[in-house]
Image (cartoon, rainbow, N blue to C red; front, side, top):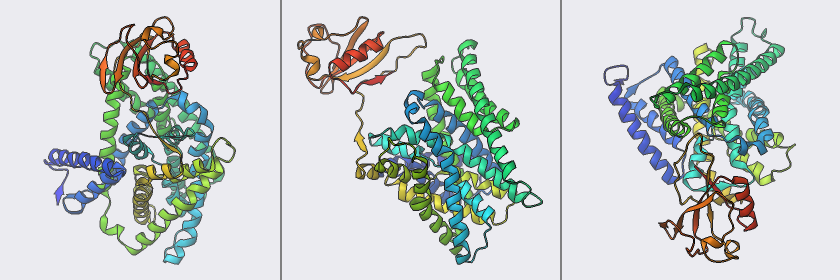
Length: 500
């Protein structure tokens, strides 16, 4: 066994990262979530090579990683895209989490005695609370690798839910730990719990919004000579948002997510470099967190009969009953989703690293049966990833909700904060050529220019007399976005890709 606190920690870390990246490549090829492979690599190294059982270090790594992941998730979320599904998304991220936890807790409480286990309802609720949030990051890595889109605004709905439901699960977990560790066993009652949840949500939301606006104002005004320091400055705001909000009794994870949402939807200096940096850094944090959790688990404990029985039962019930019940109940007031869409949202309730991370909190608090709880959550998460994670794409096709996304022919990286021009990509159709077959015959608004044409994989700069063909892809830049959209509609062009 190698002790990773020794001088070889850098070598071992580099080897783990290398193997994890290669495993991620294999995962994409076979349509499996990369998270499953990252966890597997950690478990494999923890089995024979590395000794690691530090709860404190695992929680610290998870907290730092989750802050980065949630912030980047908010930063990459377009408010314009989530606006139509804001209501159902918030319902799933709040009431859906609570409902999932309650339904699953009732099941655990009822079946545990049949397996020879004594689990009180508060402990069953704690187990369920740790597993009540979804992790759809791996889902979208699969969909995007397959260039698969989803109808009925399902992608932004699932992105919003997965990015915003971790805070509710975290609050439920901390609240129930407080109930189980209180001296009187029940003085931390329902009324106090409700007040705690409301305060956490309100303070976390307000703090996240204000810190996000402060970050935007600071980055736009500070004028740093070394542009690389903008990433460092934004990192400081992320950790400040979490720590300060937690200090004033708000939910730090909610604050981090909302701060990212604010930053991502405002004009920002160096926004493109910041986005590229945080995309790569988020992948690093995900890999580190998943590897750490894989190293932490004891594989021998996962094979105990009570863990296998309860973990298998919890995993199956969560997939087939608890998640569907919560989803169908939360989406009941929203009539714009078909039954197939609701079924797909139910199926894509993947569990990931966050439930495993939250399951370490009872270990830290010294809760009775905390080891059993952790191992059951870990095994149930693996079941979720294997069963649901490998069928995300197939289920979308089976339900008729998938379509193949058109890949952009132009990779436009040009961006400046003061630039008002917008890039779009369109494909030439018959309607565009009705007035004539050359570029000059197309009616476009003023201050609009066709910069490049892609034809059968060949690129060239057009002139006014250039003959256009159906299927040509045009790269268009314009200062008149609204007028250009109207012109596209007149020509019967619905599929417009916004670039840059």
